[in-house]
Image (tube, rainbow, N blue to C red):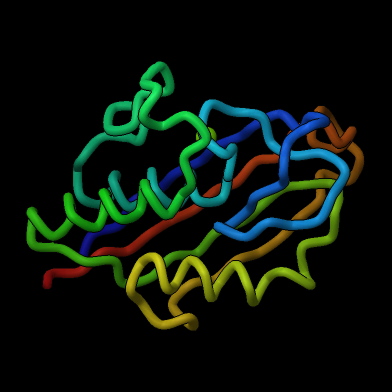
Length: 157
Ligand code: MG
């Protein structure tokens, strides 16, 4: 078994959909980014790559490459699963924290777990998602950004 860590943050802006954990969440703003801005998926993707000693998503999916413009986390995950498989590993479990002032994520937590578990090919109870606010502090607390932290465990095939 090996473990990896990942973090990500993106600005919350008008005119974008809010996608978190592969799920579209109704809100008046969304996360900016070259891809779909899904901070939760990006943190998990980095944790998986880190666990396998495979660098980070910036190396594999450069944000100046038009191929990844608007890309969904599902695209990143399917490529990362291939890379893990080539090294003889598969995902085992993921734990993550999303830090976001609004909207409340609790109503969407199970949908995110289900979508992430399906994308990673692991049981839903092997994906845990926690949601925190920043208690009004800083840019996240002022609703200008969101962040996510994740750890992933991978195991031998
Ligand atoms: Mg990102």
